[in-house]
Length: 151
Image 1 (spheres, rainbow, N blue to C red):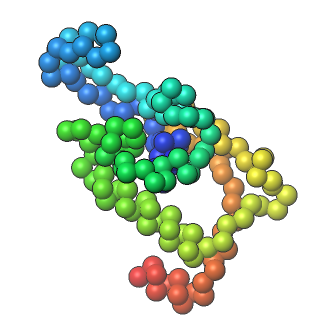
Image 2: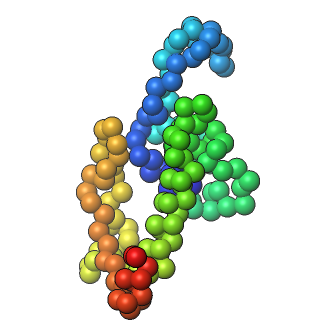
């Protein structure tokens, strides 16, 4: 999930923050009350920050003691103005994906090959796909079990 949050974040920019006092960060002078906007799209794809930054590598965060509260991954912002539902949001995303994977088999539509999947995104306030992803979901469990899971 962390790699999905890194490579396919909700939007390109974090919400604006204001510096409470005059500061110097890596040689840049920030006057008091400067507006700061972090470009997470560029940050998460920067090869100085992540090895093979443009590749989807789910194992990137395996074994790491860091979690989404650290500054190396900020899908829900961080610091004093982070999203208050951050912990719940992270757990719910993991739960939804786990439930989907447990109850369904996924495959590509007939005739579509994995290399043909279009992962290009449209730029805007959020990052919708330029072309919708296509997949065929087939339930693995009987209807009675699926109904029980939904209730």
